[in-house]
Amino acid sequence: MKPKAYRAAILAVFVLFSAAVIASGCTQQAVKKPVQAVQPANFTEAQLGSGFQLRFNETRLIRQGNIKVRFIGVSEDSRCPADVQCVWEGQAAVIVELAKDDESLGNFRLENRAGFDDLAIQAFSGHFVKLLKVEPYPTSKQRIKQQDYVIGLIVSKM
Image (cartoon, rainbow, N blue to C red; front, side):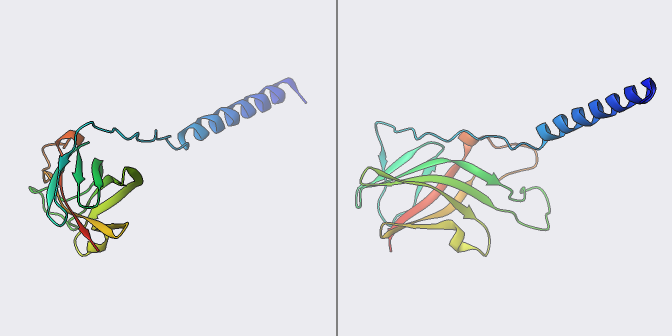
């Protein structure tokens, strides 16, 4: 092989290798750290069968059934801002942690989406939790921070 052709081949291999390294770095998925449960010392109480509100990272205790519900956060808020006209109204999804008899049942996604009421409900241990509302409602001029969200829930027997 001639020296110029040899250098061109080496340069081509180097360019292809560099492009492959860069491309592989761009396609890697971000690793999400698992959310660790924060167990507050005191719980505010809610009544079984009555609606209640939860702020970000707040926990409610429902004594009838020894149920704890914690609002972990909003995982999606694609609702059409109040000051904009949209083709689709969008949806809001929240993550709540459920516990019964001091045993965690896990984290569950509840969705507030028009026409899909079943996505707002999670059944557990002879009970269900239903997402009633997600506030505040978005506007195009302001981004909502996690700590500003308040959700409305109800926990009832099945």
